[in-house]
Image 1: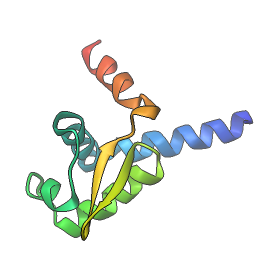
Image 2 (image 1 turned 45 degrees about the horizontal axis):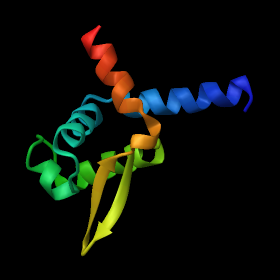
Image 3 (image 1 turned 90 degrees about the horizontal axis):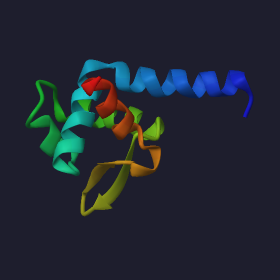
Image 4 (image 1 turned 180 degrees about the vertical axis):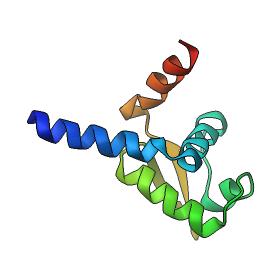
Length: 93
């Protein structure tokens, strides 16, 4: 992958996690293991629809993965990214 492509991927990744609402959602998923737009919206000061849009951004960035469960989608942090560990280390340094 070219340097420019890597920079674009990094920019997209960090801009996805850079939004305070998405970062809070990501933290909730780290702590709770998984969640839906409905369960996350109950813990955040935004609507379920806003949560669903934010989860879509996190999913496209490869930070979370969705699994259909009935009429909803259950989101989990994508362990393959290992981004969760990097963020946790950064917060503790």
